[in-house]
Amino acid sequence: MTNPEPMFPHIRICEEDFDLTTEAANLRAGHKDIGAVVTFVGTVRDINEGDEVSILELEHYPGMTEKALEKIRLEAHQRWHLEASHIIHRIGKMYPCDQIVMVAVASRHRENAFHAAHFIMDYLKTNAPFWKKETLPDGSERWVDARVSDKEAESRWAK
Amino acid sequence: MLNILYFASFREVLGQAQEQMPADYNTVECLLKALAERGEAWQQALLHNQNLQIAVNHDVANRSTAIKAGDEVAFFPPVTGG
Image 1: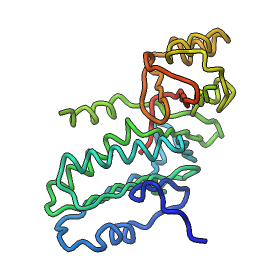
Image 2: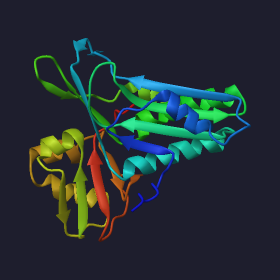
Image 3: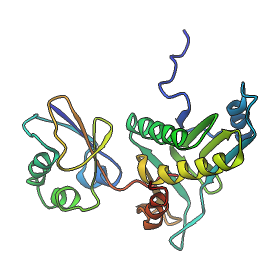
Image 4: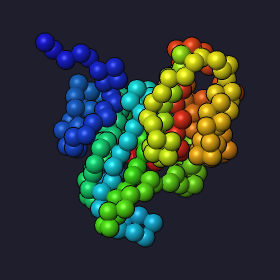
């Protein structure tokens, strides 16, 4: 039996790691009119708020997360002329240096691709239902608080 | 019935991820007031929390959003992905 077609084929939420080269190649596949590919990869830091971080665990809201990410992605396509875009966000347990999120955008010209990737990342930080929990070296756990700077980053795109 | 979901720190503080409630409330605010009668933790996390985030049927909502039987209402803290 074949797997059912995913509801949002350009959105992937998974525990597994991803390969940027493969993802960028898939993004470009079938497009001969692409002049620019911008990719952003977010990685897990080993320090936050001055404390060493051993483990980062990502929780999400299945169903709403995909819908929220697709809405952000489509808004980017409405604002800029893009040929393709893809968002990957990992969930579950991750460790320092692990890749956690990828945004890849392809367009005819670089300006659109740069702006769109930046926009998608800023909106994702404040609009997609993911929550981070940190484990410190002593085993204590804490939820990561939302940052005012993330909200400010989002507001710069207000029309 | 209403399907109520709690995420992240709310799930931990309130001690549950999901529950069913009768669809006796016209708005999210009415539901919040009913939940807040359970005690201090509920009042702090939900009713008196200016940072409370709400979704109804996977869409961003607010306290005045109307709800009806069969709806999924989710409560969670500000998001921190990426």
